[in-house]
Image (tube, rainbow over all chains, first blue to last red; front, top):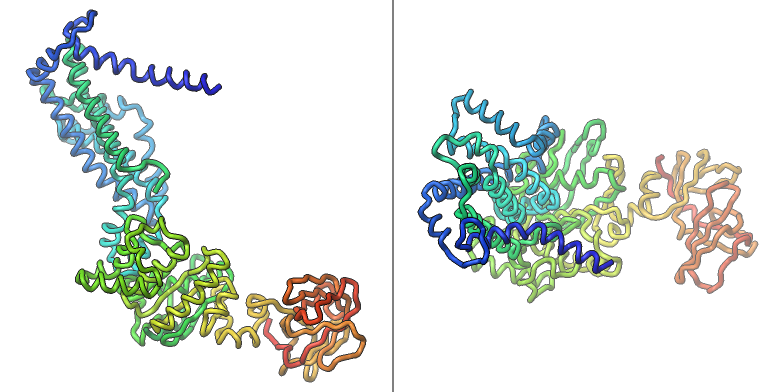
Length: 256
Length: 348
């Protein structure tokens, strides 16, 4: 039974990671047509360095994802705090309204945003993409930070108040440090939601400027080149080391 | 160190009256126990003193100064929570220093005061640890040190020893009392544990349904309860109901018992005031004859439940000192006797 479970686990991991490993290997293969034998070469990385469009799109993606993470995490944390600590009218309704955006297909959200942004004059471009991403990642942040807040006793903030801390001091010196792992997890989430986002970015991108997923899609339609493998390899390595770094310093889940 | 006066405090949550026109004066340097069942309003009163609850009407003053509109962080109180509420991300030192730190006190002063506090609560040398690495009793002391470092006017304690096991609890009761005497601070604590209230308090108040039932020294309240509720909540009691006669009370079966003063129909007798004997000779004072239903041996004393004609279905409860080392077996015919002076008339 135990053996069977191990084989099963191995199969799942293989299924998940083999395609990625193959892609990463091909980034280092000289042949553009995936020909064997494997010949190690950095030719596709050199080509990537000269591909202005792809590099520009990568930068756009990193910037948008970073700014999105900052904005969505700040707004979302404050919203989660309000939901957890205050009573106000329509609180339940607002809480319920957080979830549909997670389940509504992106294609539909993207279309509605495109129409709305056109209609209001916001238009298309990186600013529109950022706006869309913030709206999209807010619910995730509120859910992640809210879960951590629910675990945190109100008495800690009350204790701070009895000791003379103003509400701002209590938030900065007690609430925020205790919430930090949740806030960081939420920021990563927001970064990932934005960085991965294709549909909405595709709809809201102005001609000439786009994000990496959109640029990759466009490139693939024109004809696949292993430069895509090269940029993907860089992204995978960076994001995995980021995750490991955070996982090392913060325990996710139950432990406090 | 302050006098605290609560006058006509009322607070309602919808139809529920958590506090109903409560007035209490807490004397300077007094250790005061607020006692009541859960939901009685005692915690609401404590939280109103702290500033977490806004009263609908009434006033609270510290040393004659009204504080109802002073926010929690400027009220100058110290508070201990049942869960201790130590900051998990800070060390013991940092936890204790918090109150001075947010006031922007100089580093040297903070350091010195933290050391003083650690010595006061007998925890020197543990300052570098995180709260998680401490035992329940140690966390308790850190919470106390943290609450006292700012030299608050009043120390509020919410079921301070509720989370400790029995032995540790008794030790901490003694220490809490000593530290309170050393600092001379006015301390007000909430508890549902009557023994704790009797041991710790200079005075106690019994609260029920948002109303103040009785205040006084523990001994006064225990020996002379004013109401059936106070008698039943604080300690064990036998309740006698009947019709008032000259100098006493006529019970259901016609027996007349003497009471301490005029009685309007209900009187209370504490079980330890009743002596239980098997010999047929009739003693002086109030006497009821009956049959032992149950005898529970607890070493130092014996608890008897006795069926009497006067009380009918409700057994008479008596705590007897175990002087002879022998038990009166269930079924024995016995005589229960007590002094009329221990038969306390109460209101319903």
